[in-house]
Amino acid sequence: MQLKGRSRKQILEELERANAKNQRYEEGKIFCSMCTKPHKLAIKAYNMFLCSNLGDSGLFEGSAQLETDVINQLATLLHGPGAVGAIVSGGTEANLMALLAARNKTNIAEPEVILPSSVHFSFVKICNLLKVKPVYAELDSNFRADPSSVEKHISKRTIALVATAGTAELGVVDPIDKLSEIAQKHAVYFHVDAALGGLFIPFLPSTKPQFDFSLPAVASITVDPHKMGMAPIPAGGILFRGPQMLEYLKTETPYLTNRYQYTLVGTRTGASAASAWAVLNALGIEGFRKVVKSCIRTTKVLSQGITDAGLSLAVEPTLNIVAFRSTATKKLAERLWSQGWYVSYVPRYDCIRMVVMPHVKQCHVIAFLRKLRENL
Image: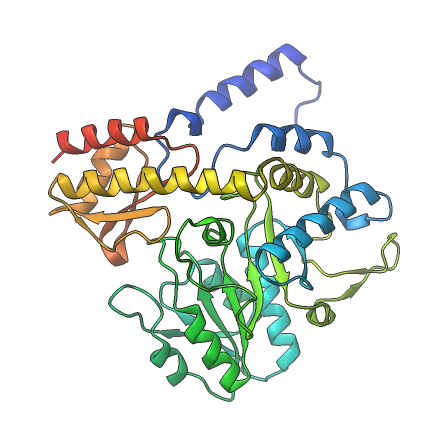
C-alpha cells in the first residue's frame, strides 16, 4: 500500500482502463458463461442495498424480509410451499450446504455420496472439504445419470444422491423422477443441483421434466438467481424441503442480533437478495416465460445452423446449451476464441459448448454461424 492516497481522477481513470479489458455481455460474443447481463432493476436494487448485511439481520430487517420473500417465491415455483433456505454466494455454496446437512444428519463414519459423472465440478471441492468420498455413477447414451448405476452404488455409507437439472457442460436433465423413486426406496437424502435449470425448466412452453419438490424424495434444491434470474453476481440459492434440515447447519452467534446462523458465509450482502427480489417481481411468471421462449428460439437457430454447417451435435439440446463436434474440435474452439468468439471446449466430451443466455440474441448467433463456417 502506498503512503499517500491518489486523486479521485487517477483512481477512476485506472478503473476505467481495467474495466475496458473486460468482455461485455451485450456484445453477444460471450457464449461460454451461465451468467448474463443483470436486469436494469436488479442493478438499481443492488446499489440500494450495498450496505446491508444479512448476517446480522436484526439490523437490516428490510433486507431480511426481501430474502424471505425471494425464498418463498422460489419455493412456490418449485412446488415446495413450506421450503426454507437462503440467498448465498452461488451454486457451489448452495451444493456445499446441502451435502453438509446430509452428512451431519446421517453422522456416518466414512460417508459417501453418489454423483453422476456429469455432475458439476463444485462437488469435487465439496467432497474434499467435507471428507466425503465421491462415488460416480455412469451415464446413459444421452449423457444423463443411469438410474441402475446409481442404485447399484448405494451402500450403508451413502449419505446422499445428487442429480442435475441442466448439466453445466451439456445442459441435459437427469431422470430425476426415477432417481427420486430410488432415493425414497432406500431412504437416502436426495439433492438436485438446478443452478441453471431451476429458473428455466418451470417456464418451458411444453412438457417439462420433473425435477423439483413435487417429487417426494427431493430434499433440497440449488437454484441460482445470478444465472437465468438475471441478478448481479453473487446470488445463488439453496432451498430445503422443510426447516428441520436447518438444524444440521445451525451455528450459535454469541454477539449478533440473530441468535443463530445457518449459512456458511457469515457476512452476506443484502444486495443479492434485493436484486433477485426485484427481478422476480418485475417479470413474474409471464415475463420469465418470454425470456425462456426467446432463449429457446435462439438456441434452435444456433443448433440448426451448426448442423447445416455439417457439424454434429453432441446431444440434442434440452435447455439452452448447445454442444457440437468437428474433425478437430479443440483447434476450432481455439481459433474461434482467438477471433473474439468466447466458446468453451469440453475435453471429456471433445465438444464445443455454447450457452444461450438472455444476452445472446439471434443476430449474435447469425454472426457467429457466419464466422464458424469461415473457420471450417
